[in-house]
Image (cartoon, rainbow, N blue to C red; front, side, top):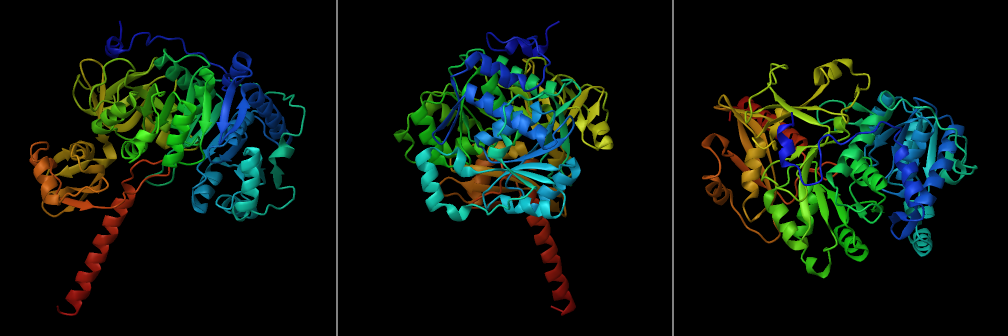
Length: 570
Protein backbone atom coordinates (compact mmCIF):
# COMPACT_ATOMS: atom_id res chain seq x y z
CA UNK A 1 0.00 0.00 0.00
CA UNK A 2 1.49 3.38 -0.99
CA UNK A 3 2.51 5.83 1.69
CA UNK A 4 0.34 8.90 2.15
CA UNK A 5 2.96 11.27 0.73
CA UNK A 6 3.59 9.35 -2.50
CA UNK A 7 0.52 10.89 -4.17
CA UNK A 8 2.10 14.35 -3.73
CA UNK A 9 5.46 13.49 -5.34
CA UNK A 10 6.53 15.37 -8.45
CA UNK A 11 6.32 13.58 -11.79
CA UNK A 12 9.19 11.16 -12.30
CA UNK A 13 9.88 10.61 -8.58
CA UNK A 14 9.11 7.27 -6.94
CA UNK A 15 9.34 6.41 -3.25
CA UNK A 16 10.56 2.89 -4.07
CA UNK A 17 13.64 3.89 -6.10
CA UNK A 18 16.50 1.38 -5.55
CA UNK A 19 19.12 2.48 -3.01
CA UNK A 20 22.50 0.83 -3.64
CA UNK A 21 24.98 -0.11 -0.89
CA UNK A 22 28.61 0.48 -1.87
CA UNK A 23 31.76 2.15 -0.54
CA UNK A 24 31.22 5.90 -0.54
CA UNK A 25 34.21 6.52 -2.78
CA UNK A 26 32.36 4.71 -5.58
CA UNK A 27 30.66 8.09 -6.17
CA UNK A 28 33.99 9.51 -7.27
CA UNK A 29 35.21 6.47 -9.21
CA UNK A 30 31.95 6.29 -11.16
CA UNK A 31 32.10 10.02 -11.93
CA UNK A 32 35.66 9.72 -13.23
CA UNK A 33 34.67 6.82 -15.51
CA UNK A 34 31.55 8.54 -16.84
CA UNK A 35 32.67 12.15 -17.05
CA UNK A 36 36.47 12.02 -17.41
CA UNK A 37 37.55 15.31 -18.94
CA UNK A 38 34.43 17.25 -17.92
CA UNK A 39 35.02 19.93 -15.28
CA UNK A 40 34.62 18.77 -11.69
CA UNK A 41 35.79 21.75 -9.61
CA UNK A 42 36.33 25.45 -10.20
CA UNK A 43 38.03 27.19 -7.28
CA UNK A 44 38.39 30.92 -7.84
CA UNK A 45 39.23 30.19 -11.48
CA UNK A 46 41.51 27.17 -10.88
CA UNK A 47 39.88 24.24 -12.68
CA UNK A 48 40.06 20.47 -12.18
CA UNK A 49 38.55 17.85 -14.48
CA UNK A 50 37.10 14.63 -13.08
CA UNK A 51 40.21 12.84 -14.35
CA UNK A 52 42.42 15.34 -12.48
CA UNK A 53 40.35 14.93 -9.33
CA UNK A 54 40.42 11.13 -9.48
CA UNK A 55 44.19 11.02 -9.95
CA UNK A 56 44.79 13.42 -7.04
CA UNK A 57 42.51 11.42 -4.76
CA UNK A 58 44.32 8.16 -5.56
CA UNK A 59 47.71 9.72 -4.84
CA UNK A 60 46.48 11.30 -1.64
CA UNK A 61 44.93 7.97 -0.59
CA UNK A 62 48.24 6.21 -1.03
CA UNK A 63 49.92 9.05 0.86
CA UNK A 64 47.49 8.64 3.76
CA UNK A 65 48.19 4.92 3.77
CA UNK A 66 51.90 5.67 4.07
CA UNK A 67 51.37 7.85 7.16
CA UNK A 68 49.27 5.24 8.91
CA UNK A 69 45.66 5.59 7.82
CA UNK A 70 44.00 2.21 7.92
CA UNK A 71 40.58 0.73 8.59
CA UNK A 72 38.97 2.56 11.51
CA UNK A 73 41.58 5.34 11.81
CA UNK A 74 39.83 8.69 12.18
CA UNK A 75 41.21 11.68 10.31
CA UNK A 76 40.12 15.22 11.05
CA UNK A 77 39.51 17.43 8.02
CA UNK A 78 39.65 21.03 9.19
CA UNK A 79 39.44 23.07 5.98
CA UNK A 80 37.42 25.84 4.36
CA UNK A 81 35.82 25.06 0.98
CA UNK A 82 38.76 24.27 -1.31
CA UNK A 83 39.71 21.44 -3.68
CA UNK A 84 41.69 19.98 -0.77
CA UNK A 85 38.39 19.40 1.04
CA UNK A 86 37.10 17.09 -1.70
CA UNK A 87 40.42 15.38 -2.37
CA UNK A 88 41.21 14.58 1.27
CA UNK A 89 37.65 13.48 2.07
CA UNK A 90 37.67 10.74 -0.56
CA UNK A 91 41.35 9.92 -0.11
CA UNK A 92 40.87 9.17 3.59
CA UNK A 93 37.93 6.91 2.72
CA UNK A 94 39.91 5.05 0.06
CA UNK A 95 42.73 4.51 2.53
CA UNK A 96 40.23 2.85 4.86
CA UNK A 97 39.87 5.72 7.33
CA UNK A 98 36.92 7.63 8.75
CA UNK A 99 36.47 11.32 7.97
CA UNK A 100 35.79 13.62 10.92
CA UNK A 101 34.41 16.88 9.55
CA UNK A 102 35.64 19.88 11.56
CA UNK A 103 34.77 23.55 11.34
CA UNK A 104 37.97 25.62 10.78
CA UNK A 105 36.39 28.48 12.74
CA UNK A 106 36.06 26.36 15.88
CA UNK A 107 37.85 27.71 18.91
CA UNK A 108 40.92 25.90 20.16
CA UNK A 109 38.83 24.34 22.95
CA UNK A 110 36.14 23.13 20.53
CA UNK A 111 38.77 21.52 18.30
CA UNK A 112 40.36 19.90 21.34
CA UNK A 113 37.04 18.45 22.50
CA UNK A 114 36.38 16.76 19.15
CA UNK A 115 39.97 15.54 18.74
CA UNK A 116 39.79 13.94 22.18
CA UNK A 117 36.31 12.48 21.69
CA UNK A 118 37.07 11.00 18.25
CA UNK A 119 40.65 10.01 19.21
CA UNK A 120 42.02 11.77 16.14
CA UNK A 121 45.76 11.45 15.60
CA UNK A 122 45.96 12.80 12.04
CA UNK A 123 44.55 16.17 11.00
CA UNK A 124 44.34 17.89 7.61
CA UNK A 125 44.68 21.66 7.84
CA UNK A 126 45.92 24.72 5.92
CA UNK A 127 48.85 27.07 6.34
CA UNK A 128 46.62 30.08 7.05
CA UNK A 129 47.29 32.06 10.24
CA UNK A 130 43.58 32.07 10.99
CA UNK A 131 43.63 28.29 11.23
CA UNK A 132 47.03 26.65 11.70
CA UNK A 133 48.05 28.02 15.15
CA UNK A 134 45.02 26.37 16.79
CA UNK A 135 45.96 23.04 15.22
CA UNK A 136 49.64 23.50 16.14
CA UNK A 137 48.70 23.71 19.83
CA UNK A 138 47.04 20.31 19.58
CA UNK A 139 50.32 18.95 18.19
CA UNK A 140 52.32 20.46 21.02
CA UNK A 141 49.84 19.06 23.50
CA UNK A 142 50.39 15.62 21.91
CA UNK A 143 46.72 15.17 21.12
CA UNK A 144 47.73 14.93 17.46
CA UNK A 145 50.76 13.18 16.04
CA UNK A 146 50.60 14.32 12.40
CA UNK A 147 49.21 17.31 10.51
CA UNK A 148 48.89 17.32 6.74
CA UNK A 149 49.47 20.90 5.57
CA UNK A 150 47.61 22.19 2.51
CA UNK A 151 49.18 25.42 1.14
CA UNK A 152 46.70 28.04 -0.04
CA UNK A 153 48.97 29.35 -2.78
CA UNK A 154 49.14 25.95 -4.55
CA UNK A 155 45.42 25.88 -5.39
CA UNK A 156 45.12 29.42 -6.74
CA UNK A 157 45.32 30.26 -10.46
CA UNK A 158 48.82 31.42 -11.46
CA UNK A 159 48.27 35.18 -11.37
CA UNK A 160 46.19 35.06 -8.18
CA UNK A 161 48.87 32.87 -6.63
CA UNK A 162 51.59 35.41 -7.39
CA UNK A 163 49.50 38.28 -6.00
CA UNK A 164 48.64 36.23 -2.91
CA UNK A 165 52.32 35.48 -2.26
CA UNK A 166 53.18 39.19 -2.52
CA UNK A 167 50.21 40.88 -0.87
CA UNK A 168 48.92 38.26 1.56
CA UNK A 169 52.17 36.81 2.91
CA UNK A 170 51.25 37.94 6.41
CA UNK A 171 48.27 35.57 6.35
CA UNK A 172 50.52 32.49 6.00
CA UNK A 173 51.87 30.66 9.03
CA UNK A 174 55.45 29.50 9.30
CA UNK A 175 55.37 25.70 9.37
CA UNK A 176 58.08 23.59 10.97
CA UNK A 177 59.84 21.05 8.76
CA UNK A 178 59.69 17.95 10.94
CA UNK A 179 58.12 14.51 11.14
CA UNK A 180 54.89 15.89 12.62
CA UNK A 181 54.13 17.90 9.47
CA UNK A 182 53.46 16.45 6.02
CA UNK A 183 53.16 18.91 3.15
CA UNK A 184 50.39 18.08 0.70
CA UNK A 185 52.80 17.90 -2.24
CA UNK A 186 54.77 15.23 -0.33
CA UNK A 187 51.55 13.36 0.53
CA UNK A 188 50.73 12.99 -3.18
CA UNK A 189 54.31 12.26 -4.30
CA UNK A 190 53.64 8.63 -5.25
CA UNK A 191 52.32 6.51 -8.13
CA UNK A 192 48.70 6.61 -6.93
CA UNK A 193 48.37 2.83 -6.91
CA UNK A 194 46.46 2.74 -3.66
CA UNK A 195 45.59 -0.58 -2.08
CA UNK A 196 42.00 0.27 -1.18
CA UNK A 197 40.67 -1.12 2.07
CA UNK A 198 37.85 -3.63 2.06
CA UNK A 199 34.68 -2.02 3.35
CA UNK A 200 31.35 -3.28 4.63
CA UNK A 201 29.20 -0.31 3.50
CA UNK A 202 26.41 -1.08 5.96
CA UNK A 203 28.62 -1.41 9.03
CA UNK A 204 31.78 0.62 8.45
CA UNK A 205 31.74 4.29 9.45
CA UNK A 206 32.61 6.71 6.64
CA UNK A 207 31.99 10.02 8.42
CA UNK A 208 31.81 11.20 12.01
CA UNK A 209 29.55 14.25 11.84
CA UNK A 210 29.48 16.18 15.08
CA UNK A 211 26.19 17.78 16.05
CA UNK A 212 26.02 21.45 16.88
CA UNK A 213 26.41 20.93 20.60
CA UNK A 214 23.96 23.69 21.60
CA UNK A 215 23.63 21.98 24.96
CA UNK A 216 26.62 20.21 26.48
CA UNK A 217 29.35 18.61 24.44
CA UNK A 218 28.73 17.86 20.75
CA UNK A 219 28.02 14.23 19.85
CA UNK A 220 29.60 12.39 16.92
CA UNK A 221 26.93 10.92 14.65
CA UNK A 222 28.35 7.74 13.07
CA UNK A 223 27.39 7.75 9.39
CA UNK A 224 28.17 4.57 7.48
CA UNK A 225 29.25 4.43 3.84
CA UNK A 226 25.74 3.19 3.03
CA UNK A 227 24.11 6.07 4.97
CA UNK A 228 25.92 8.87 3.15
CA UNK A 229 25.74 7.17 -0.26
CA UNK A 230 22.01 6.58 0.20
CA UNK A 231 21.35 10.26 0.89
CA UNK A 232 23.20 11.31 -2.27
CA UNK A 233 21.07 8.88 -4.27
CA UNK A 234 17.88 10.13 -2.61
CA UNK A 235 18.64 13.75 -3.49
CA UNK A 236 19.47 12.75 -7.07
CA UNK A 237 16.15 10.92 -7.37
CA UNK A 238 14.39 14.04 -6.04
CA UNK A 239 15.71 15.99 -9.05
CA UNK A 240 14.92 13.78 -12.06
CA UNK A 241 15.10 16.72 -14.45
CA UNK A 242 18.73 17.64 -13.83
CA UNK A 243 20.90 16.72 -16.78
CA UNK A 244 23.73 14.26 -16.16
CA UNK A 245 27.06 16.03 -16.53
CA UNK A 246 25.57 19.35 -17.63
CA UNK A 247 24.75 20.99 -14.31
CA UNK A 248 26.80 23.25 -12.05
CA UNK A 249 26.46 23.64 -8.29
CA UNK A 250 27.49 26.62 -6.18
CA UNK A 251 29.44 25.48 -3.12
CA UNK A 252 29.40 28.40 -0.70
CA UNK A 253 27.88 26.66 2.33
CA UNK A 254 30.75 24.83 4.06
CA UNK A 255 31.54 21.27 3.03
CA UNK A 256 32.33 20.33 6.65
CA UNK A 257 28.60 20.73 7.28
CA UNK A 258 26.54 17.65 6.42
CA UNK A 259 24.08 19.69 4.30
CA UNK A 260 26.82 20.80 1.90
CA UNK A 261 28.64 17.46 2.13
CA UNK A 262 25.59 15.75 0.62
CA UNK A 263 23.82 18.38 -1.51
CA UNK A 264 26.90 20.10 -2.91
CA UNK A 265 29.82 17.66 -2.97
CA UNK A 266 28.19 14.24 -3.18
CA UNK A 267 25.27 15.35 -5.34
CA UNK A 268 27.74 16.95 -7.77
CA UNK A 269 29.67 13.70 -8.06
CA UNK A 270 26.65 11.43 -8.46
CA UNK A 271 25.25 13.72 -11.17
CA UNK A 272 28.57 14.56 -12.85
CA UNK A 273 28.08 18.26 -12.13
CA UNK A 274 30.69 20.97 -11.75
CA UNK A 275 31.28 22.49 -8.32
CA UNK A 276 32.05 26.19 -8.02
CA UNK A 277 33.69 26.29 -4.60
CA UNK A 278 33.98 29.51 -2.61
CA UNK A 279 35.99 29.56 0.64
CA UNK A 280 33.55 31.87 2.47
CA UNK A 281 30.30 33.74 1.98
CA UNK A 282 30.83 37.09 0.28
CA UNK A 283 27.57 38.30 -1.26
CA UNK A 284 29.10 40.12 -4.22
CA UNK A 285 31.39 37.18 -5.01
CA UNK A 286 28.42 34.80 -4.81
CA UNK A 287 26.41 36.91 -7.25
CA UNK A 288 29.36 37.29 -9.63
CA UNK A 289 29.99 33.53 -9.59
CA UNK A 290 26.34 32.72 -10.25
CA UNK A 291 26.01 35.26 -13.04
CA UNK A 292 29.34 34.79 -14.82
CA UNK A 293 29.31 30.99 -14.81
CA UNK A 294 25.58 30.42 -15.39
CA UNK A 295 25.32 28.18 -12.31
CA UNK A 296 22.21 26.00 -12.34
CA UNK A 297 21.88 24.67 -8.76
CA UNK A 298 22.44 26.36 -5.41
CA UNK A 299 22.02 25.15 -1.84
CA UNK A 300 21.91 27.57 1.06
CA UNK A 301 20.52 28.59 4.42
CA UNK A 302 17.71 31.16 4.58
CA UNK A 303 20.07 33.99 5.52
CA UNK A 304 21.81 33.61 2.13
CA UNK A 305 18.56 33.99 0.22
CA UNK A 306 17.55 36.91 2.44
CA UNK A 307 20.87 38.61 1.65
CA UNK A 308 20.43 38.09 -2.10
CA UNK A 309 16.88 39.45 -2.00
CA UNK A 310 18.06 42.55 -0.16
CA UNK A 311 21.04 43.38 -2.38
CA UNK A 312 20.59 46.88 -3.81
CA UNK A 313 22.19 46.18 -7.21
CA UNK A 314 20.72 42.73 -7.79
CA UNK A 315 19.51 43.79 -11.24
CA UNK A 316 23.16 43.98 -12.35
CA UNK A 317 23.47 40.19 -12.14
CA UNK A 318 21.87 37.59 -14.39
CA UNK A 319 20.61 34.75 -12.19
CA UNK A 320 18.22 33.25 -14.73
CA UNK A 321 20.43 30.18 -15.24
CA UNK A 322 19.41 28.91 -11.80
CA UNK A 323 16.99 26.00 -12.07
CA UNK A 324 16.64 24.79 -8.48
CA UNK A 325 17.71 26.10 -5.10
CA UNK A 326 17.26 24.20 -1.85
CA UNK A 327 17.13 25.94 1.50
CA UNK A 328 17.88 24.07 4.69
CA UNK A 329 19.17 24.49 8.21
CA UNK A 330 16.35 26.78 9.40
CA UNK A 331 12.75 27.68 8.49
CA UNK A 332 12.43 29.45 5.13
CA UNK A 333 10.00 32.39 5.43
CA UNK A 334 7.39 32.31 2.67
CA UNK A 335 8.07 35.98 1.86
CA UNK A 336 11.74 35.17 1.24
CA UNK A 337 10.86 32.24 -1.02
CA UNK A 338 8.39 34.26 -3.08
CA UNK A 339 10.73 37.26 -3.48
CA UNK A 340 13.68 35.06 -4.53
CA UNK A 341 11.58 33.17 -7.08
CA UNK A 342 10.26 36.49 -8.42
CA UNK A 343 13.79 37.89 -8.79
CA UNK A 344 15.35 34.79 -10.41
CA UNK A 345 12.58 32.68 -11.94
CA UNK A 346 14.16 29.77 -10.07
CA UNK A 347 12.32 27.22 -7.94
CA UNK A 348 13.37 27.64 -4.28
CA UNK A 349 12.23 24.76 -2.07
CA UNK A 350 12.66 24.12 1.64
CA UNK A 351 14.11 20.88 2.93
CA UNK A 352 14.76 19.45 6.37
CA UNK A 353 17.47 17.30 7.78
CA UNK A 354 19.72 16.47 10.71
CA UNK A 355 23.35 15.44 11.02
CA UNK A 356 22.11 12.08 12.26
CA UNK A 357 20.34 11.51 8.91
CA UNK A 358 23.24 12.26 6.55
CA UNK A 359 21.40 14.81 6.67
CA UNK A 360 18.36 15.20 4.38
CA UNK A 361 15.02 13.69 5.47
CA UNK A 362 12.36 15.68 3.62
CA UNK A 363 12.11 18.26 0.87
CA UNK A 364 9.34 20.12 -0.90
CA UNK A 365 8.78 18.68 -4.37
CA UNK A 366 10.40 20.38 -7.36
CA UNK A 367 7.86 21.10 -10.05
CA UNK A 368 4.89 20.14 -7.86
CA UNK A 369 2.89 21.73 -5.06
CA UNK A 370 4.78 23.41 -2.23
CA UNK A 371 2.71 24.09 0.88
CA UNK A 372 3.37 27.24 2.86
CA UNK A 373 5.27 26.47 6.05
CA UNK A 374 5.89 22.81 5.17
CA UNK A 375 9.28 21.13 5.17
CA UNK A 376 7.98 18.94 2.34
CA UNK A 377 7.65 15.21 1.80
CA UNK A 378 9.83 12.29 2.90
CA UNK A 379 12.57 11.43 0.40
CA UNK A 380 12.46 8.10 -1.47
CA UNK A 381 12.99 5.19 0.90
CA UNK A 382 12.25 7.38 3.94
CA UNK A 383 9.38 6.95 6.40
CA UNK A 384 8.42 9.78 8.75
CA UNK A 385 6.22 9.10 11.75
CA UNK A 386 4.79 11.45 14.39
CA UNK A 387 4.80 9.94 17.87
CA UNK A 388 4.04 11.00 21.40
CA UNK A 389 7.29 12.16 23.06
CA UNK A 390 6.22 10.61 26.37
CA UNK A 391 4.95 7.35 24.88
CA UNK A 392 7.66 6.30 22.49
CA UNK A 393 5.52 3.63 20.89
CA UNK A 394 2.37 5.71 20.35
CA UNK A 395 1.66 6.95 16.84
CA UNK A 396 -0.24 10.22 16.74
CA UNK A 397 -3.36 10.53 14.56
CA UNK A 398 -3.05 12.38 11.26
CA UNK A 399 -2.78 16.13 11.82
CA UNK A 400 -1.92 15.87 15.51
CA UNK A 401 1.35 17.27 16.86
CA UNK A 402 4.02 14.96 18.18
CA UNK A 403 7.71 14.10 17.91
CA UNK A 404 8.98 13.65 14.35
CA UNK A 405 10.70 10.26 13.90
CA UNK A 406 12.64 9.00 10.88
CA UNK A 407 13.22 5.54 9.42
CA UNK A 408 15.41 5.24 6.35
CA UNK A 409 18.73 4.15 4.84
CA UNK A 410 20.31 7.53 5.68
CA UNK A 411 19.78 7.20 9.46
CA UNK A 412 23.02 6.95 11.46
CA UNK A 413 24.40 3.91 13.23
CA UNK A 414 24.44 5.80 16.56
CA UNK A 415 26.54 8.29 18.52
CA UNK A 416 30.23 7.54 19.05
CA UNK A 417 30.78 6.38 22.63
CA UNK A 418 27.35 7.60 23.76
CA UNK A 419 25.38 4.43 24.34
CA UNK A 420 22.80 6.12 26.58
CA UNK A 421 22.18 8.97 24.09
CA UNK A 422 21.96 6.44 21.27
CA UNK A 423 19.42 4.32 23.16
CA UNK A 424 17.24 7.39 23.83
CA UNK A 425 17.22 8.58 20.22
CA UNK A 426 17.30 5.26 18.32
CA UNK A 427 14.29 3.09 19.19
CA UNK A 428 13.35 0.08 17.04
CA UNK A 429 15.22 1.51 14.06
CA UNK A 430 13.55 4.92 14.36
CA UNK A 431 15.50 8.09 14.98
CA UNK A 432 13.67 10.41 17.36
CA UNK A 433 14.55 13.91 16.16
CA UNK A 434 13.44 16.04 19.11
CA UNK A 435 11.38 18.14 16.70
CA UNK A 436 7.65 18.67 17.12
CA UNK A 437 5.49 18.47 14.01
CA UNK A 438 2.55 16.91 12.21
CA UNK A 439 1.64 15.31 8.87
CA UNK A 440 -1.33 16.57 6.85
CA UNK A 441 -3.75 14.62 4.66
CA UNK A 442 -1.46 14.96 1.61
CA UNK A 443 1.64 13.69 3.38
CA UNK A 444 3.27 17.11 3.82
CA UNK A 445 5.18 17.52 7.05
CA UNK A 446 5.03 20.65 9.15
CA UNK A 447 7.45 21.41 11.96
CA UNK A 448 6.17 23.31 14.93
CA UNK A 449 9.43 23.61 16.86
CA UNK A 450 12.19 21.87 18.74
CA UNK A 451 11.00 20.10 21.88
CA UNK A 452 13.77 21.80 23.85
CA UNK A 453 12.77 25.26 22.53
CA UNK A 454 9.18 24.88 23.73
CA UNK A 455 7.96 27.83 25.84
CA UNK A 456 5.59 26.89 28.68
CA UNK A 457 3.25 29.84 29.19
CA UNK A 458 0.73 29.43 31.98
CA UNK A 459 0.37 25.72 31.27
CA UNK A 460 0.14 26.17 27.48
CA UNK A 461 2.70 25.03 24.92
CA UNK A 462 3.94 27.98 22.87
CA UNK A 463 6.21 27.29 19.90
CA UNK A 464 8.79 29.99 18.97
CA UNK A 465 8.61 29.05 15.29
CA UNK A 466 4.91 30.00 15.12
CA UNK A 467 5.69 33.46 16.52
CA UNK A 468 8.74 33.87 14.28
CA UNK A 469 6.75 33.05 11.14
CA UNK A 470 4.08 35.61 12.09
CA UNK A 471 6.64 38.36 12.75
CA UNK A 472 8.45 37.54 9.51
CA UNK A 473 5.30 38.49 7.59
CA UNK A 474 5.86 42.17 8.41
CA UNK A 475 7.44 43.99 5.47
CA UNK A 476 10.00 45.76 7.69
CA UNK A 477 11.39 42.57 9.26
CA UNK A 478 14.50 40.89 7.86
CA UNK A 479 15.29 38.33 10.57
CA UNK A 480 13.73 37.25 13.86
CA UNK A 481 14.44 34.84 16.70
CA UNK A 482 12.12 34.09 19.63
CA UNK A 483 13.10 32.58 22.97
CA UNK A 484 11.36 31.98 26.29
CA UNK A 485 12.28 34.14 29.29
CA UNK A 486 11.20 33.65 32.93
CA UNK A 487 7.94 35.31 33.91
CA UNK A 488 6.64 35.56 37.49
CA UNK A 489 3.02 35.11 36.43
CA UNK A 490 3.12 32.71 33.46
CA UNK A 491 6.31 30.82 34.24
CA UNK A 492 7.77 31.72 30.85
CA UNK A 493 6.97 34.39 28.28
CA UNK A 494 8.05 34.83 24.64
CA UNK A 495 10.66 37.45 23.81
CA UNK A 496 11.33 38.40 20.18
CA UNK A 497 14.66 39.67 18.88
CA UNK A 498 14.19 41.45 15.54
CA UNK A 499 16.53 42.73 12.84
CA UNK A 500 14.90 45.18 10.45
CA UNK A 501 15.55 45.56 6.74
CA UNK A 502 17.94 48.39 5.79
CA UNK A 503 16.15 51.73 6.02
CA UNK A 504 13.03 50.24 7.64
CA UNK A 505 11.46 51.64 10.79
CA UNK A 506 9.24 49.79 13.26
CA UNK A 507 8.34 50.12 16.94
CA UNK A 508 7.39 47.36 19.33
CA UNK A 509 3.87 48.78 19.61
CA UNK A 510 3.46 48.77 15.82
CA UNK A 511 4.69 45.19 15.62
CA UNK A 512 2.38 43.98 18.38
CA UNK A 513 -0.57 45.65 16.68
CA UNK A 514 0.39 43.87 13.43
CA UNK A 515 0.51 40.53 15.28
CA UNK A 516 -2.84 40.95 17.02
CA UNK A 517 -4.80 39.12 14.30
CA UNK A 518 -2.01 36.66 13.54
CA UNK A 519 -1.26 35.17 16.97
CA UNK A 520 -3.35 34.02 19.88
CA UNK A 521 -3.09 36.10 23.08
CA UNK A 522 -0.96 33.41 24.73
CA UNK A 523 1.51 33.51 21.78
CA UNK A 524 1.93 37.31 21.73
CA UNK A 525 5.50 38.22 22.70
CA UNK A 526 5.75 40.05 26.01
CA UNK A 527 9.01 41.70 24.95
CA UNK A 528 10.42 42.88 21.62
CA UNK A 529 14.05 43.90 21.22
CA UNK A 530 15.39 45.36 17.98
CA UNK A 531 19.01 44.64 17.07
CA UNK A 532 21.31 45.53 14.19
CA UNK A 533 22.50 41.90 14.01
CA UNK A 534 21.27 38.59 15.39
CA UNK A 535 23.65 35.83 16.47
CA UNK A 536 24.25 33.06 13.95
CA UNK A 537 25.97 29.72 13.95
CA UNK A 538 29.13 29.24 11.92
CA UNK A 539 27.08 28.01 8.97
CA UNK A 540 24.79 31.04 8.98
CA UNK A 541 21.76 29.73 10.87
CA UNK A 542 20.10 31.99 13.41
CA UNK A 543 21.16 30.87 16.88
CA UNK A 544 19.18 31.12 20.13
CA UNK A 545 21.78 29.94 22.63
CA UNK A 546 23.70 33.24 22.77
CA UNK A 547 20.47 35.15 23.43
CA UNK A 548 19.41 32.69 26.12
CA UNK A 549 22.84 33.08 27.78
CA UNK A 550 22.61 36.89 27.56
CA UNK A 551 19.19 36.90 29.19
CA UNK A 552 20.40 34.62 31.98
CA UNK A 553 23.44 36.81 32.60
CA UNK A 554 21.28 39.94 32.67
CA UNK A 555 18.93 38.37 35.23
CA UNK A 556 21.87 37.49 37.47
CA UNK A 557 23.22 41.03 37.14
CA UNK A 558 19.83 42.47 38.05
CA UNK A 559 19.64 40.23 41.13
CA UNK A 560 23.08 41.43 42.19
CA UNK A 561 22.05 45.08 41.79
CA UNK A 562 18.86 44.52 43.79
CA UNK A 563 20.81 42.68 46.47
CA UNK A 564 23.35 45.48 46.79
CA UNK A 565 20.57 48.05 46.97
CA UNK A 566 18.80 46.10 49.72
CA UNK A 567 22.03 45.83 51.71
CA UNK A 568 22.49 49.58 51.52
CA UNK A 569 18.95 50.18 52.64
CA UNK A 570 17.89 51.83 49.40
